[in-house]
Image 1 (cartoon, helix red, strand yellow):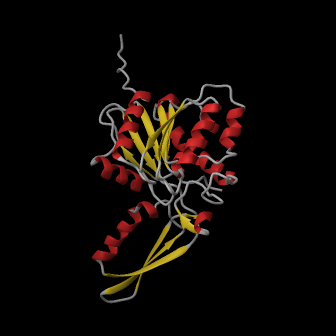
Image 2: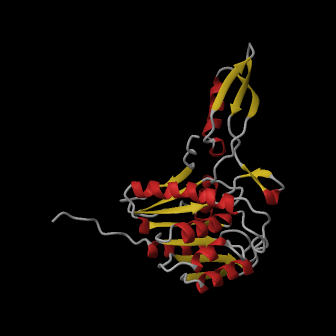
Image 3: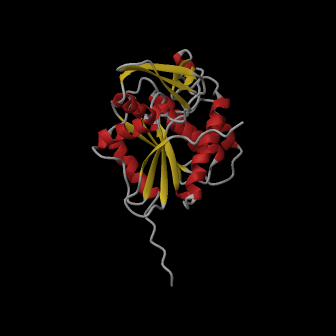
Length: 292
């Protein structure tokens, strides 16, 4: 079986020499480009740094077959339609592009050897861009560990790509919003305890999370956790985030929880500015090496 395609990603390159990397995982139903655009709208600019590359990957596609048929004038708009293939949600697909008919109108048939999303149980099996499946959106149910572990393998490839590019593992941060933050905690605290740190925005772990089980057996120094949560969050309750923070602290994680009164399940400018300050603290500018 062929290896899975690399995760599609939107990247904000550093303004100067690249010495550190930040991986930001989007929430359920979003994309890497969508998360980047959201933050850009809040800050009125990209979240960018002098020395840190910011990577926004997109949760992968589920393989299936479907046809998309549309009518386009020939020939200009047919070729313009090929821009669809550059869309974030249509990446990693194999396309068969056909033109049928005669005259001024042609039927363009794109046979997609992929679907853009994966089934998500809380949406009654509907397709959505998610990092893993859940039995329900609750902290009081089992984790869908098979899908979580599968994604940990995919995201490990992304970390390894940065290491191959010369970035030390302790110069890599990972985190995200909502489900993305939960995914990051699984990845770091179960498989990559030598990362620089973890951030989780409006996120939680289940009460009997495998993260807690792994940390009970741990004896090494753990990545610091930066956590933010709004008290008005009705999707991921503030109490879930608070309980996650307390549990991780009890298991040896140096964890902070920044509370935002009246903030719902969303990001705020103040929150992102606090996150940026923490990021630079964990990944400071390195002095350029000189040859003596």
